[in-house]
Image (tube, rainbow over the protein chains, first blue to last red):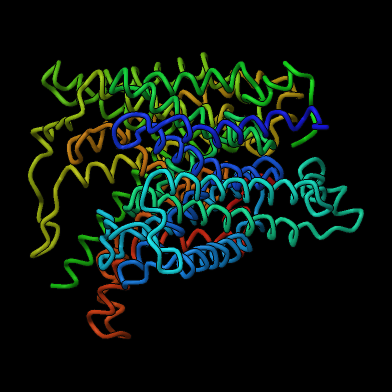
Length: 316
Length: 306
């Protein structure tokens, strides 16, 4: 028997699974590529939610990991290495190292200072990418094609790539659920509720928070790998601070501390962006006030509304 | 020759420094006194520049334009405070980040709708146009000197306001412990409003002053905002003195690092490697500085809260 709280995630993933079976949706599989983008940003948002929602660590530099993952693809491709079996580990390892280094420094600070120092590290990554003149500098670079899997060009079609991203999203979602419900995840959530008490009962929170920070950064590096592959283009624009802000918006729109919410938030953000920009060139003129209204009047985001409707609240 | 360049770049660094201070002064108090993360402060700077451009074009005189732009910027800040920000003081930082991020998106787009996407230009006022010879072989634009002088004048004025007046005392007390000030019978809501409006006006003033030398365009405040954050964090949140020192530090390090970084590195590396590393390192210098300061002093150089 399926428990009630599993209905929402199952319907989300079912919707993602059946969508490509319904047809190609116009020229160049337009809708398919939008939904692929939604799933890629859902991975990024889920990873951010681990630290933002579960850890209460407001990181304002998460887009740096998106960029690192993307540049791992770009730089290796520029040297003729298009093999995903090399690119993916490279993206994950560099992301993890960057997270380890910056996290170790950032986590010494609290509150506003933490927000600002993660922002500063994000900007450092951004300017570093801008300075990479050999890899396109400010303009970025176009990739020769999507990554190869064990020498085979199997994700060249939009549909095949869609399923690759879908599989990644499921894997990340399952892994994150295991993390947040584990003993480790409960320590992280405990630190969110009351850090003093957690320290007092003997947990060294720094090590726990650094671990979750590294996990979140690494997973976001995977999203960066996928993003570079989808657009077949890599540029510093992936790691502007505005992009970090957008990732935060996705998590908050969905509802903090909810993995389902992070996926829904990414979908809501990108679909609103796409939808509004069809009607008007000035879509941000409507999206900005919408954000302000969400903060002022709709606390808890989409998941908050969902929980109020169904009366379920299990901390996922 | 290189010494002349050093002087010019030092003056440019000072100019960036006072500019950052004008924006940071208000923002550090908003952060410190109200514990409020305001991402939309860079927008105030942009609005100031646009208002100055508009009023200058209307009146045909920069100083009339400035005189009209300042109260308008103040009014605009107060309206934002009244309708949006005051409802956010009690919220957590994340809500504040989200709402002020929304305001940035809205206003960056709104100025594009109102004034167009093309950059506006403002002529330098007649009496301050041209350059002066500061030293033999050192020519410097007068308007940039005016910006430096007015920034330092305002810093002094703020210093007097903060240390010698009652309202300044209350603001400093608020930055150290706002609930206590409130418990002593001070209308903290009104204090917040004054600080906010004043900060908005200072940022607007900064925008108006640089309007003649930079292009006035949508999003012009975004990157400066990040530099301002660096300043505030290095200086210590809530400290005007810290903001002043950190602003000059950041302005000088950024400007001098960009122009001299590669040539200093050349002493250690071969020329092409030095040029490459210099280009990569120079824009990152201030962030490295910030990370280093926070590593040794997690609350900045002059923290207001003890």
